[in-house]
Image (cartoon, rainbow, N blue to C red):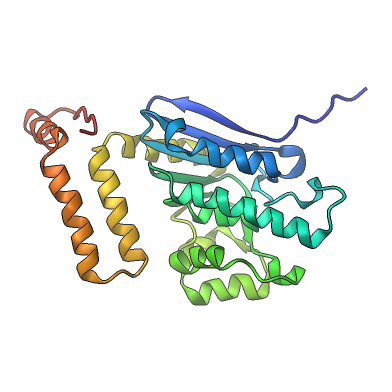
Length: 265
Protein backbone atom coordinates (compact mmCIF):
# COMPACT_ATOMS: atom_id res chain seq x y z
CA UNK A 1 0.00 0.00 0.00
CA UNK A 2 1.45 3.35 -1.05
CA UNK A 3 2.13 6.06 1.49
CA UNK A 4 -0.25 9.05 1.38
CA UNK A 5 1.20 12.20 -0.13
CA UNK A 6 2.60 14.67 2.38
CA UNK A 7 0.29 17.70 2.60
CA UNK A 8 1.64 20.92 1.17
CA UNK A 9 3.17 23.24 3.74
CA UNK A 10 5.52 26.15 4.25
CA UNK A 11 8.77 25.01 5.87
CA UNK A 12 10.77 27.53 7.91
CA UNK A 13 14.42 26.88 8.81
CA UNK A 14 16.66 29.18 10.85
CA UNK A 15 20.33 29.56 9.87
CA UNK A 16 21.95 32.01 12.25
CA UNK A 17 20.51 35.44 11.53
CA UNK A 18 18.74 34.37 8.34
CA UNK A 19 15.64 32.29 7.65
CA UNK A 20 15.05 29.91 4.74
CA UNK A 21 11.38 29.58 3.78
CA UNK A 22 10.49 26.69 1.47
CA UNK A 23 7.29 26.17 -0.50
CA UNK A 24 6.87 22.42 -0.04
CA UNK A 25 4.19 20.67 -2.07
CA UNK A 26 6.16 18.61 -4.58
CA UNK A 27 3.30 16.26 -5.39
CA UNK A 28 1.44 19.26 -6.87
CA UNK A 29 4.36 21.17 -8.40
CA UNK A 30 4.70 23.17 -5.15
CA UNK A 31 1.34 24.80 -5.83
CA UNK A 32 0.00 27.03 -3.07
CA UNK A 33 -3.32 26.27 -1.40
CA UNK A 34 -5.16 28.65 0.94
CA UNK A 35 -3.43 27.41 4.09
CA UNK A 36 0.00 27.67 2.49
CA UNK A 37 -0.62 31.23 1.28
CA UNK A 38 -1.70 32.21 4.79
CA UNK A 39 1.30 30.45 6.34
CA UNK A 40 3.70 32.20 3.96
CA UNK A 41 2.29 35.60 4.89
CA UNK A 42 2.51 34.74 8.60
CA UNK A 43 6.13 33.59 8.30
CA UNK A 44 7.09 37.05 7.04
CA UNK A 45 5.46 39.09 9.79
CA UNK A 46 7.59 41.16 12.15
CA UNK A 47 6.84 38.94 15.16
CA UNK A 48 7.99 35.84 13.28
CA UNK A 49 11.32 37.41 12.32
CA UNK A 50 12.77 38.41 15.65
CA UNK A 51 16.57 38.84 15.31
CA UNK A 52 16.34 37.83 11.63
CA UNK A 53 18.17 40.04 9.15
CA UNK A 54 17.43 38.38 5.79
CA UNK A 55 15.14 35.74 4.27
CA UNK A 56 15.65 33.24 1.46
CA UNK A 57 12.48 32.05 -0.28
CA UNK A 58 12.67 28.89 -2.37
CA UNK A 59 10.75 25.78 -3.44
CA UNK A 60 11.18 22.13 -2.52
CA UNK A 61 12.86 19.75 -4.93
CA UNK A 62 14.61 20.53 -8.20
CA UNK A 63 11.76 21.00 -10.67
CA UNK A 64 9.45 23.74 -9.44
CA UNK A 65 9.65 26.88 -7.38
CA UNK A 66 5.85 26.84 -7.51
CA UNK A 67 3.09 26.27 -10.00
CA UNK A 68 1.08 29.10 -8.49
CA UNK A 69 -2.30 29.09 -6.76
CA UNK A 70 -3.78 25.61 -6.50
CA UNK A 71 -7.28 26.12 -7.92
CA UNK A 72 -8.03 22.40 -7.82
CA UNK A 73 -7.79 22.49 -4.03
CA UNK A 74 -11.15 24.28 -3.92
CA UNK A 75 -13.47 21.41 -4.76
CA UNK A 76 -17.07 22.42 -5.23
CA UNK A 77 -16.41 26.12 -5.83
CA UNK A 78 -17.25 27.75 -9.15
CA UNK A 79 -13.97 28.20 -10.98
CA UNK A 80 -14.36 31.97 -11.38
CA UNK A 81 -14.98 32.36 -7.65
CA UNK A 82 -11.99 30.13 -6.91
CA UNK A 83 -9.85 32.39 -9.07
CA UNK A 84 -11.05 35.50 -7.20
CA UNK A 85 -10.51 33.90 -3.79
CA UNK A 86 -7.07 32.66 -4.79
CA UNK A 87 -6.09 36.09 -6.08
CA UNK A 88 -7.07 37.77 -2.80
CA UNK A 89 -5.01 35.34 -0.74
CA UNK A 90 -2.15 35.53 -3.20
CA UNK A 91 -2.21 39.32 -3.03
CA UNK A 92 -1.80 39.17 0.75
CA UNK A 93 1.14 36.76 0.43
CA UNK A 94 2.86 38.88 -2.23
CA UNK A 95 2.31 42.01 -0.12
CA UNK A 96 3.88 40.20 2.85
CA UNK A 97 6.98 39.43 0.76
CA UNK A 98 7.18 43.00 -0.50
CA UNK A 99 6.55 44.48 2.93
CA UNK A 100 8.83 42.11 4.82
CA UNK A 101 10.84 44.09 7.40
CA UNK A 102 14.08 42.48 6.18
CA UNK A 103 15.34 41.76 2.64
CA UNK A 104 13.88 38.72 0.87
CA UNK A 105 15.95 36.86 -1.74
CA UNK A 106 14.02 34.49 -4.02
CA UNK A 107 15.96 31.37 -5.05
CA UNK A 108 14.00 30.08 -8.04
CA UNK A 109 15.02 26.43 -7.99
CA UNK A 110 12.69 25.56 -10.86
CA UNK A 111 9.64 26.67 -12.79
CA UNK A 112 7.48 29.53 -11.51
CA UNK A 113 4.10 30.26 -13.01
CA UNK A 114 1.25 32.67 -12.37
CA UNK A 115 0.89 33.91 -8.82
CA UNK A 116 4.08 32.16 -7.72
CA UNK A 117 6.06 34.30 -10.13
CA UNK A 118 4.35 37.40 -8.74
CA UNK A 119 5.41 36.35 -5.24
CA UNK A 120 8.99 36.05 -6.49
CA UNK A 121 8.75 39.47 -8.14
CA UNK A 122 7.85 40.94 -4.75
CA UNK A 123 11.23 39.83 -3.34
CA UNK A 124 14.20 42.19 -3.18
CA UNK A 125 15.99 40.19 -5.88
CA UNK A 126 15.93 36.81 -7.56
CA UNK A 127 18.41 34.07 -8.46
CA UNK A 128 17.32 31.36 -10.89
CA UNK A 129 18.45 27.84 -11.63
CA UNK A 130 19.60 27.26 -15.18
CA UNK A 131 16.78 25.58 -17.11
CA UNK A 132 13.94 27.04 -15.03
CA UNK A 133 10.96 28.47 -16.91
CA UNK A 134 8.67 31.33 -15.97
CA UNK A 135 5.24 32.26 -17.27
CA UNK A 136 2.12 34.35 -16.68
CA UNK A 137 -0.86 32.51 -18.23
CA UNK A 138 -3.93 34.60 -17.23
CA UNK A 139 -4.67 35.79 -20.78
CA UNK A 140 -4.61 32.18 -22.00
CA UNK A 141 -7.25 31.44 -19.35
CA UNK A 142 -9.38 34.46 -20.19
CA UNK A 143 -8.91 36.80 -17.24
CA UNK A 144 -7.16 40.09 -16.58
CA UNK A 145 -4.55 39.93 -13.85
CA UNK A 146 -4.81 42.25 -10.82
CA UNK A 147 -3.17 45.66 -11.22
CA UNK A 148 -1.00 45.23 -8.10
CA UNK A 149 0.56 42.12 -9.60
CA UNK A 150 1.14 43.66 -13.02
CA UNK A 151 2.73 46.66 -11.34
CA UNK A 152 5.35 44.42 -9.73
CA UNK A 153 6.42 43.22 -13.18
CA UNK A 154 6.42 46.69 -14.75
CA UNK A 155 8.47 48.04 -11.83
CA UNK A 156 11.16 45.38 -12.27
CA UNK A 157 11.16 44.47 -15.98
CA UNK A 158 9.52 47.49 -17.62
CA UNK A 159 6.34 47.72 -19.66
CA UNK A 160 7.52 46.09 -22.93
CA UNK A 161 8.80 42.90 -21.25
CA UNK A 162 5.65 42.78 -19.11
CA UNK A 163 3.49 43.03 -22.23
CA UNK A 164 5.42 40.21 -23.89
CA UNK A 165 5.07 37.97 -20.84
CA UNK A 166 1.37 38.64 -20.16
CA UNK A 167 -0.02 39.15 -23.67
CA UNK A 168 1.56 36.08 -25.26
CA UNK A 169 1.20 33.86 -22.19
CA UNK A 170 4.33 32.06 -23.38
CA UNK A 171 6.86 30.90 -20.78
CA UNK A 172 10.38 32.27 -20.96
CA UNK A 173 13.56 30.54 -19.87
CA UNK A 174 15.86 31.69 -17.10
CA UNK A 175 18.35 33.34 -19.46
CA UNK A 176 15.64 35.42 -21.13
CA UNK A 177 14.35 36.32 -17.66
CA UNK A 178 17.84 37.56 -16.78
CA UNK A 179 18.01 39.62 -19.97
CA UNK A 180 14.81 41.51 -19.13
CA UNK A 181 15.71 41.96 -15.47
CA UNK A 182 13.27 39.50 -13.90
CA UNK A 183 16.18 37.60 -12.34
CA UNK A 184 19.59 38.95 -11.34
CA UNK A 185 21.64 35.82 -11.92
CA UNK A 186 21.27 32.40 -13.54
CA UNK A 187 23.33 29.69 -11.87
CA UNK A 188 23.68 25.92 -11.80
CA UNK A 189 20.86 24.31 -9.86
CA UNK A 190 23.21 22.65 -7.38
CA UNK A 191 24.76 26.00 -6.50
CA UNK A 192 21.54 28.02 -6.29
CA UNK A 193 20.58 27.69 -2.63
CA UNK A 194 24.16 28.07 -1.40
CA UNK A 195 24.56 31.28 -3.38
CA UNK A 196 21.22 32.67 -2.18
CA UNK A 197 22.14 31.85 1.43
CA UNK A 198 25.54 33.50 0.93
CA UNK A 199 23.77 36.63 -0.32
CA UNK A 200 21.48 36.55 2.71
CA UNK A 201 24.40 36.21 5.12
CA UNK A 202 26.17 39.10 3.36
CA UNK A 203 23.10 41.26 3.96
CA UNK A 204 22.84 40.06 7.57
CA UNK A 205 26.45 41.09 8.26
CA UNK A 206 25.72 44.73 7.42
CA UNK A 207 24.15 47.41 9.59
CA UNK A 208 20.39 46.82 10.00
CA UNK A 209 19.61 50.54 10.03
CA UNK A 210 21.65 51.05 6.88
CA UNK A 211 19.87 48.14 5.19
CA UNK A 212 16.39 49.33 6.17
CA UNK A 213 17.11 52.91 5.16
CA UNK A 214 18.60 52.00 1.82
CA UNK A 215 15.65 49.71 1.03
CA UNK A 216 13.25 52.54 1.84
CA UNK A 217 15.03 54.98 -0.44
CA UNK A 218 15.25 52.50 -3.30
CA UNK A 219 11.54 51.66 -2.97
CA UNK A 220 10.62 55.36 -3.00
CA UNK A 221 12.65 55.96 -6.17
CA UNK A 222 11.22 52.77 -7.70
CA UNK A 223 7.69 53.98 -6.96
CA UNK A 224 8.36 57.24 -8.77
CA UNK A 225 8.17 59.71 -5.89
CA UNK A 226 9.46 63.21 -6.53
CA UNK A 227 13.25 63.56 -6.15
CA UNK A 228 12.73 65.98 -3.26
CA UNK A 229 10.59 63.43 -1.40
CA UNK A 230 13.18 60.68 -1.98
CA UNK A 231 15.84 63.05 -0.64
CA UNK A 232 13.75 63.71 2.49
CA UNK A 233 13.30 59.97 3.10
CA UNK A 234 17.03 59.42 2.66
CA UNK A 235 17.88 62.29 5.01
CA UNK A 236 15.63 60.95 7.78
CA UNK A 237 17.35 57.58 7.59
CA UNK A 238 20.79 59.20 7.35
CA UNK A 239 20.17 61.17 10.54
CA UNK A 240 19.01 58.02 12.30
CA UNK A 241 22.15 56.20 11.14
CA UNK A 242 24.46 59.04 12.21
CA UNK A 243 22.92 58.99 15.68
CA UNK A 244 23.17 55.20 16.03
CA UNK A 245 25.67 52.97 17.80
CA UNK A 246 26.02 51.03 14.55
CA UNK A 247 27.96 53.75 12.76
CA UNK A 248 30.43 53.99 15.65
CA UNK A 249 30.86 50.20 15.59
CA UNK A 250 31.26 50.16 11.82
CA UNK A 251 33.95 52.82 11.84
CA UNK A 252 35.81 51.21 14.76
CA UNK A 253 35.72 47.83 13.02
CA UNK A 254 37.06 49.41 9.84
CA UNK A 255 39.96 51.01 11.70
CA UNK A 256 40.67 47.82 13.63
CA UNK A 257 40.45 45.66 10.48
CA UNK A 258 37.81 43.32 11.92
CA UNK A 259 34.22 42.37 11.14
CA UNK A 260 31.67 44.72 12.76
CA UNK A 261 29.14 43.51 15.31
CA UNK A 262 26.06 45.51 14.41
CA UNK A 263 23.13 45.56 16.85
CA UNK A 264 20.66 47.73 14.95
CA UNK A 265 20.67 50.55 17.45
